[in-house]
Amino acid sequence: MTTTARPRRGFRPVLMGLAVGIGAVLGVLGTALHAGIWVVGETQGGLVIPWGAALALLICLLAQLWIGLRADSVVESTTMGAVTFSLVTVTMVWPGADQLAVPYSAEAMEALPGPTIASLVWWFGSAGITFVSMLAVRWLIAREPLPAEGPETGSDAGSDARAGVGAGSGESVTRP
Image 1 (cartoon, rainbow, N blue to C red):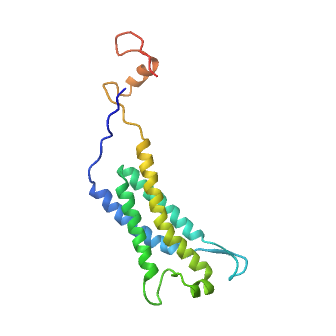
Image 2: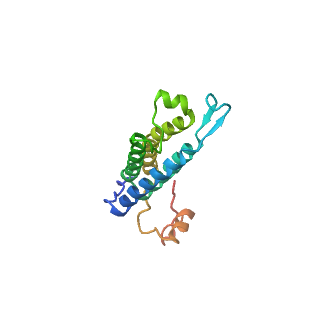
Image 3: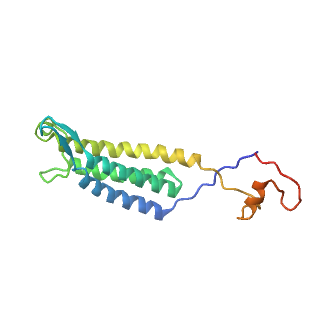
């Protein structure tokens, strides 16, 4: 049995444009969502659960998997993640008092532990999710079977081939 190389699709500007656009939307949406936190116990010493950051990261992962599998390439998935991470980084290092994320410092961690942790989870998580989706898309693309080739690819041909009947010759065909 011989295997043929999987045909590669060329550059698809529409999908790349979608990856950039959706990545930007996810960067803004995730930055807004990451502020959702639960604090179990005291405000200063309780357990911080950054549910908003976790939800934003899940949305990013699903979107990156979708675009990567749709494009049949890790390039679009990685591009989407890079755009998202870039926007998150801008919100983390934005100068002035009108920040959308709380950058890490000892003072910020002491005064606002919940928002600081949520911001760090969102920032580092957006980079981590990009790496995870890159690996997942590559693995999923490699696992997809090649499309069936030959004259018996129609809807009726499959039933005869599964039944073990040759194509009109009347002889039995053994298939693994």
